[in-house]
Length: 222
Image (cartoon, rainbow, N blue to C red; front, top):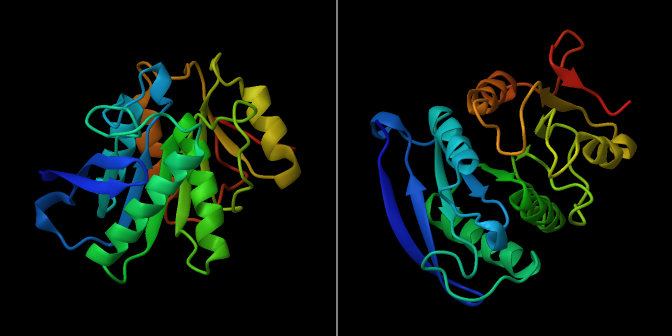
């Protein structure tokens, strides 16, 4: 069983509230994962069930995982900053975690609004010469927010019946980049009764650079 610990950290608008989850059985972590939650003005928190599923997935992969509540959520201070301040805060968490666990690669993951934050953080890290190991994006907020371009080996998972961020919008965003997306049949935006598919696909694809032509339940941007 993995252990968790709460933390507070100074962010750009005051104290941030967060949780670190450690690999099972006190194993030495193989990497760091940062998980970002959905839109704070619509009830998104670090305890959102999709964000927790992503955390548990990375813990199973042997990663130490950090989640925070964005500004104005829970005990995190400040007010919603439309993504910019939230990206700044996640960058602070990145710097803190890499200092706390030196030498480990860092994966970035997010759900819905959290995907906007993580694509922009990934862009910053790449520009600074310290790129993320990989991105995992669920319910990517295409057309809702101005998403940054993403690396070719990004793992994207989306619900077929998502009416918050329609699959067609995601494909329009991905088409110029020629990046594929895993489509979960029958899944809505919050993956009701479908959460297990998120973990199983990430576990399948984590050690690989992309999708094989033989993969099922996928839609490409072609």
